[in-house]
Image (cartoon, rainbow, N blue to C red; front, side):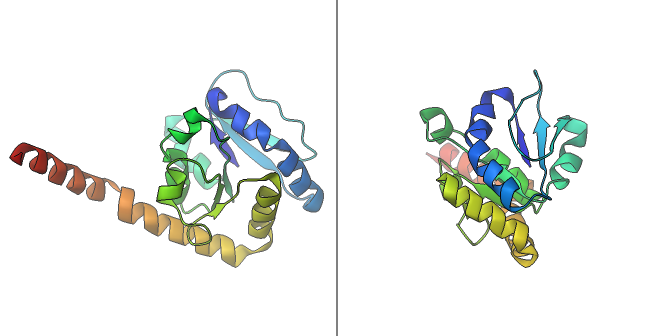
Length: 172
């Protein structure tokens, strides 16, 4: 599944050929899009596409409904400057993910350890198919991603670092 807004839809549209190949190899697969407003997106894929409207109240439920999180990012200045928030959200929910190695995704995640990174269409097909075919890998990556999110991004950890930075700044 993919969670996003219209501004990020070109990233998912770029992934269409890879998703079409995944659908040919795994006809049982469907794509779930959690859409954050605006006109509903259209993709030309040989698989069922389910579109759910994002809402703050259902964010966790919708995120947990994904077996595999997708975070394709085109190599653009805008995407290089984006925070890895969506990938961190997938991780916090224990959802195994395939992400582009762009921007902060490279600082937050380790390929094969807590995420699968993919740059080309072939790498995306290979990574998605690996996760479809290998339930223990999905479970291992999801658990490792969640542990990373809890270690580095939970409120208590971030609050402690923020307080330390503010004290350090005040001391100067």
